[in-house]
Structures are given as structure tokens and as C-alpha cells.
Length: 295
Image 1 (tube, rainbow, N blue to C red):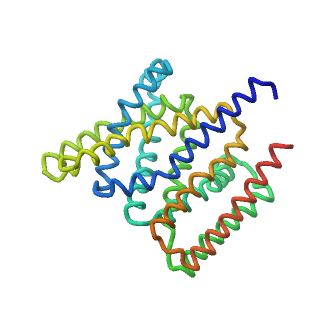
Image 2 (image 1 turned 30 degrees about the vertical axis):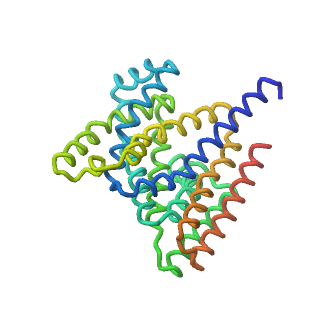
Image 3 (image 1 turned 180 degrees about the vertical axis):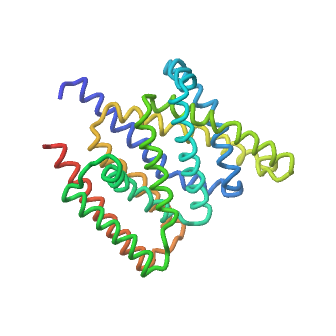
């Protein structure tokens, strides 16, 4: 590697680790803001992402990209659909953490790359390589153990994995950058979020109207907490190989799992077997990615 490439790679690794670490510790933030109902917190996340997103768009001189996305009906239609699925993903994740289901949330993001593989097979004519097949089989076995032996169907995990996969597939159909795309998506969700907050306020049931200064600051912090990791991820995606990002992406669910454990969630025998199989599947998946990258 030439020196400039080494510098870019270092920046990419730092950016990726920053993004996945923020996402990994996101449950801590949601625990601190548990006094705010999930739907209201989602509305705040959308509203406060707009000003922080606008600052980033201005710094990166991407207003032309935003305008281009807003004025092309087909692109706007895809972004509207993407906005729906990312909103579902955010809401389910918040509900999961608030209901002490961080393990399930973590499981969802462990199996997310494997769901991507299955979508490639089902809709894009891709074929499973041997190690991919083994990884998918191990993950499926883990989910079945949790469902049958543990009596705990991982609905949260599957909704998170599937909604984020659909979101990712939709975004691949649109030639728009990560930051302009997210800004347009939140802009499309803004009327609903503002309308919901106005209605809650008029009913006297909005949590933010009775929040302490500290809690209000945390609510506003939802903006940069949404925008900053995505920006870091966009930087990493431009500077790193996909296989490198594939390895690093498991930082997030691993930290989420640790937070769930620290928060007192029970690691039952069924969950232990499930996560053990998932972790083996992750190793197999990463080995396959490394071998493919070398070839």
C-alpha cells in the first residue's frame, strides 16, 4: 500500500469502529431515556436529526444531492419506502430496549448479514457458497433452539434483521449518498413526527413537556446520535474493502449483547446455545468473506 492509501485505510477503520461503537452502546442511551415512550422518542429522533443533518449536509456541500433526490419522483418514491422501513427498525429497536429485550436486538444484527445473503439468493439469483450455506444453517439452528427449547420466538430479532435488510436493498437501488439519503428520509418522516408531538402536547401526555433539563438534553441528543454514526459509516464505506467492513460490523451487536448482560437480562440455556451457534455462524461467515476477498 502506498502511504496515502494507508492513511485512508486508517481513517476508514477509525470511522467504522466509531460508527459501530456508537450503535453498540445505543441501548445505554435508550435506558437513560426510558421515561420517554418509544413512539415519542422516535418522533424526537426524527425531528432532531433534521438540524444536525442540515449542518452535515452544509459542511459536505451536498444540498444539490438533496434537491436532486427531492425533485425526481422515482428516487423520492424509493426513499419514501426506505423511510418507512428505517422508521419501523428504529421503533422496534427502541421498544426492545425499553422492554429489556437487548439480547433479541443484538441477535437481530448478528443475523442481519445472513439475511442479506438469503435475499441475494431469493431475489437476485445469487448462489450460496459452501461456507455461506453452513453459516445460514447454523443461524437457523440457533433460532430454532431458541424458539422450540426456550419457548421464545425471536420476533424482535427477525423484524430488526428483515427491516434493515429491506432498507439496505432499497438504498442500493437509489444513486444517492448516505447522508443526503438519510436527510431526505427524515424530511419525509418529519410531518408525521411533528404532527404526533403536537398532538401529544395538546393532550397533555407528551413526556418532554415534563422532562428535567438533563432528560431534555438527552432527547435533543437523539439528533447527533442518529447522524454522526451514519456519517462515520459513509466515510468507512468509501475507504475500506467490504470484507473489512464485514468483520467490523459485528462490533455493534457484540457491544449490545454486553450491555444486555450488564443490564441484567437472563442468559438462559436456550439463549446460550442460540448465541453460541450464531457466533460460530459469524466466524464461518467472516472466513468465507476473507477467502473470497483473497481470491
